[in-house]
Image 1 (cartoon, chains in turn brown, orange, purple, blue):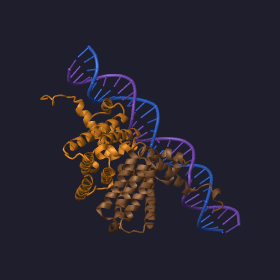
Image 2 (cartoon, chains in turn red, green, yellow, orange; image 1 turned 180 degrees about the vertical axis):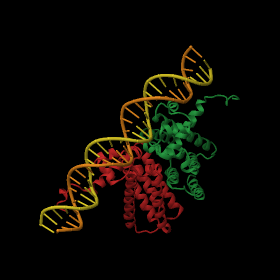
Image 3 (spheres, chains in turn red, purple, yellow, orange; image 1 turned 45 degrees about the vertical axis):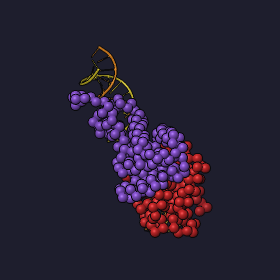
Image 4 (cartoon, protein in one colour; image 1 turned 135 degrees about the vertical axis):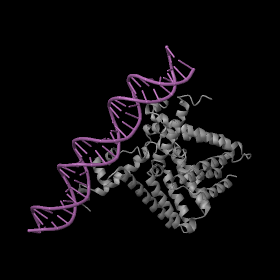
Length: 185
Length: 185
DNA sequence: GAAAACAAACCTACCAAATGGTATGTTCAA
DNA sequence: TTGAACATACCATTTGGTAGGTTTGTTTTC
């Protein structure tokens, strides 16, 4: 461990850097506008190096997506574990996770998620599966129409924050959040 | 008019066809993935012909976007004129317009709208302006937080319908719509 | 325990295809 | 005959991907 800095090749760190930068470019220029060269440059690797970690552009994109989905999963699980009330627990965590992301606006790597979903059929499938699985898992506590609507509203607010040029003002966001969390009780 | 079929060149018809097909490709492959050649082929014109109508790719995309925004405007105005109750009139029309669109799922040209908004800064601005203008116009009747949430929820449902692989089932959509329209009263 | 063998982690050089755009015709309508 | 509505041919550039080499780290063998 103490000699970690001596190692000249740290593939996991490079891989992580590639994922992060790819996510950033995905947000800034869309997925199709994302170029392997740019990502490689940003991560201080050659294109060949990148293609060693991810054998194709599609593979890179899917990896970014899965990585983000994994983080979302973790965050929601964490929020749920802090919530003592069973009914609507998932919905509240879902809303909070999205508002947390919303605060960062278009700069957040999460923005790539949405663009990806609509552009790419394969990613749409991944997202669809993820959502279906979580809904099935929490059907008993979060199945009611009111909670469903609350989640949809959170999605809508998140979307609006992306499309709105400067993002929704912070105080307005806070108000919307409270309103929504009330609905989810 | 009776000689319409004799005319060998019908620029307006060609222009319309180009817009429609461009919208379709925009949905299927994203905006950056949209190619002039593909659009031209689909509209049975050469690339040169397309570039005569729209001098650049960006010009084509903006034209598609403005076209769609115009249609949305018309539809909302039509729905509003049929609604006798003042309070929340715009919100109800907004919701209905989006559900109308939602029925067609990802095949609808409207799906291009969202993708565009997030990918392209210029289009984001156009959308933002449109939304701001309409909200300002109906501030007196549609300014309440509850109505705002209802609109956001409509956005979210529309988004979910796009990302969900096969779209939301029709009967579930109907239920959500009724639920939302109730909120908007 | 060193040397050799091997595999993983890169880099360099290159290419075929696609793409946006230009320049220059040609046909059609007024 | 003039300008709009196309078509043809072409180009410069970009981009994803391949082929093959080189360096670094690990494992095996003697």
